[in-house]
Amino acid sequence: MLIRYKKTFEKIAMGLLSFMPDEKDLKKLQLTMKEYETEENWQLFLWKEEDIIGLLGVLFDHPGNQIIIQHISVNPSHRFQGIGKKMVRALKEMYADKVIIANENTAPFIEKCDVC
Image 1 (cartoon, one colour):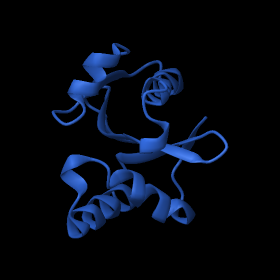
Image 2 (tube, rainbow, N blue to C red):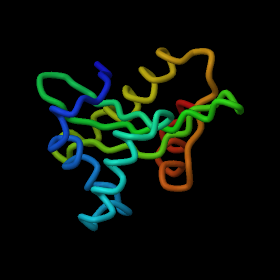
Image 3 (cartoon, helix red, strand yellow):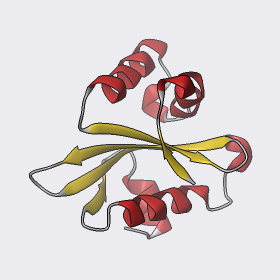
């Protein structure tokens, strides 16, 4: 189930976000988290089954009616089980009126899973 990020999930979200290649540096990771917490058009979602095992970070591009997938990450012990696809599908269901696209970092995954 896709749930909205809350501050109480900060450590879990940072851990998942740190699996993204561009988010390995702690200062960069902290800056990214701050953007998700302070920018109104940046939104983090977490994927929860029994535990939180995935993260989806998006940018709402209001004039273009688009949602840009900025970050997508799944706990390594849960990879290759379709969790990433489930997260993107759930996002599409939540925002059926929006066009969902990928950025340069998430495009290889999104193209491979063929859900957008």
